Image 1 (tube, rainbow, N blue to C red):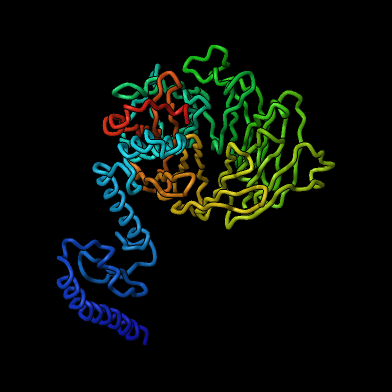
Image 2 (cartoon, rainbow, N blue to C red):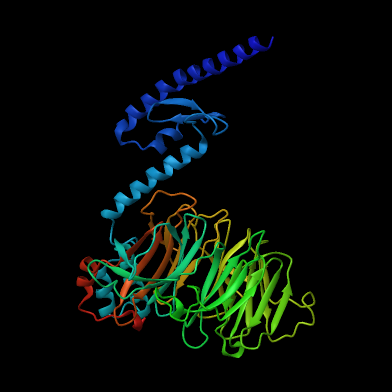
Length: 505
């Protein structure tokens, strides 16, 4: 009874597959011959005319259905994940080919000559002119590989860049790298050599390794601008996490003040489940930082060791201090964004009142205040990026195209150039116009997309410092560092007649 029924099932599957192949093969061939040649049709257009069968996948190249295997224990299985990965890789290679011969403008009727003509006739405000020029430059950026120079030889074991973070002057990068043995390494990259024909950066490594994951970091202004780095280490089962404040001068290959190769930490507090940290630049709350923990917010003054805690209903994943007012904005795993007024004393960790509060669809990954601090940019794990007006508690604009479902991904808001930059979970770097939410450019990753190769980027119009301005994007992927520089040969010549500098915007 059992073997006979199993044979009937196998016969029915094979017969149904042959039936559908014969039924739709002729229709597909006739439709392709009637419209355009088969070679000119893309795989997406051909597969869209074929009905979708549950449990089967239609291969347009072989013109037949294949059964999707339920698991990955078989030899060379055909799974939906493998199919999606193949399609993503084909799309990435196609975009890389298009980038070589890309257009200079994504906005109809806007080119360098037209911008100069309108500016000279007074038909365009100077601020709009500067933003349009940056838009043209962004679309003409070309990729160059950056050589990382180490003053001292580095042993094997470096796995990949985890993330990079630029200081306020864009002269240094704080870089975190994962090691093959499960350890983590962090240090500084000096950007003074980006202006060369073969761009180079000098690496100043920290000889201290940690087996904790560096979850998030930020630059801290304690004894001077960007004089320290605030690092948050994620805890494990055997040891809790911590928040450390390390002087930037100790990130050298030779640290004479370090004992046993370990840098002296100015401040170190052991806290479990640290999800975020942020330094306060408001002079009325000097020498203070905040850390987002599990169901609470920690605010601490490093000079007086005064600690304040605020209990919350969800984990705090993103934070941002205001500089004009004593407000701390927090984004939670539940999708809630709320503010804490630091002027109001809290009687107890659980007895305090929230300020402005609103929700998005998913867990909050990044908060960015604009120069006008009435506006807050918020991104979440559903891929939504929204600009909120904190006075009306209403979102004004939404930036479409961002891809995210679970990753902790930052935002980069550059108001001087009117740009918004974000790296998606699909490893594409997208650039939007900050004013009209137009998607200006989508940059594919130089490496195949995967969960472990999401790029980390830094954008500035004065990379390397204001003396040696090198505008563009720095992208860290795996062990490599790339510089997407402005193509001055194709853009600058057309508006050299009108002097322009980013500082005038």
